[in-house]
Length: 259
Image (cartoon, rainbow, N blue to C red):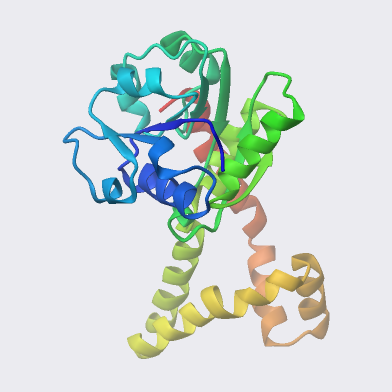
């Protein structure tokens, strides 16, 4: 159990709330040392023993670690002084230098969780420009691991790129599932069957990748020269990988420009 205090600004939103519940459930921190900002001062998370506060500065003053989990466009309106605090940002497109300028903090971590935080399966990359002691790295890794897995990345630019890759969460699989279902319907397959088939591909069959190298699987299927090989080859010939690259780059460009 940590002796430190942690505060989450935006701690009762979908992302902040999911993180708060996970921190408590995992035992990373005791509920009475977790502070959550909430405009009304009332929320079901209070039943866990977490402390709800309506004043963001009061939360900052009470905590060793401040997690900012608000929409990027809301950040400037926070007007907090977090000098001397460890600040973890879960915001896309807000550079560390801007966070430092507006909060006074010098120890800043940028992390990019995704929607799978709700089921504690998020992959969360994080970056900090400071040299960190092993205990500091362990703390951040442990905190983020409460909602899945986490990895430190070497540059802040990598966080912006990954905001458009892993940060998109279920967006790409959802798009693939929708496209497969819609194309099946267009080919004359009954809608309920089409949607079940697409779900089976994206949710069920893809679980095989948990214990297989993706490229090895692709190579073996293409070498077999069957139905699957023909479908894969068509996608590859059409520049599927390049199109994915352009899509992720488009999102990364938005993150780099600032939200």
